Length: 398
Image (cartoon, rainbow, N blue to C red; front, side, top):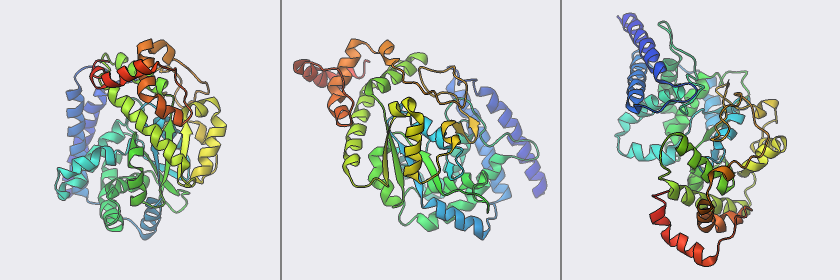
């Protein structure tokens, strides 16, 4: 009877996976009915989780447990505002043999923490499991999709990931739950590392990596959870960040309604970068400038590798996700060949930002940007004052 249920569950997964795959646009998910995509993803992930419950948690050996818990204690957090280059940094680290890199955003403090407050603890595992199944199938709404491969009527790598999470969940909770409120994300990282073979005897894995935009706001909490954690903080010129947001909204046919939030996050991020750079914690905090990365890739990558404590290998110049080449995540260069780092500084923001945009950015972010070396166009003090006063109103209209 159990074998019959297993075969039926795998058949259901395969069928639902085909339906979900048809909803995934190439190269990007097209505008349309997002509810259809969400529904297909929810049905598929629920079926995968149900099949994993039938099969039960994977059995872990003592070597795998010891290696996993040692890696779990050494996270690398990549942070910075949205559109600053955090995805590129994560993708460049993806194929390094010393790193187990989560291919989708961690978002524990920016998202999951609030969700878990609304759920009884008994539902946390299924909530995390189904959400991460969907993230592994469709991590950033553009190719590559299906990062663990495709399911068949005989086997599903996503069912095995779910079973792995079921096995690592109590271990992460019991090992880190009393000191680290983000232990559920650690369980996901261990399940992913196990599914990708990073915990085998011959594996060289030493750290796990996650990226979450704006996580710099939680830097003290990250260090409290895991004292050996290292933080890579990515910054980028405010004109370029603002223009990238504006262009992305334009391409999607939407208004730039969160412009005010973008500027507030930029200001906070620069101030945190300035403060952290003054502290004597060079082995725990590394500031990366997007302009330096694309202007002098090898130098920037060598410094990053030295900070993390890994060899600077050729893989660090090839962006991938779960080993698959990733396309450019830029709003300005979308037709480039996947798996390439574009070593050129571009100022496409000049074609996107109006004079009014630049004045508003300078007035609201200029002082904070100067703390980290970004000099913006000067705005007359009287006009800057007016723009700051008007910011809460006009930001909704940009």
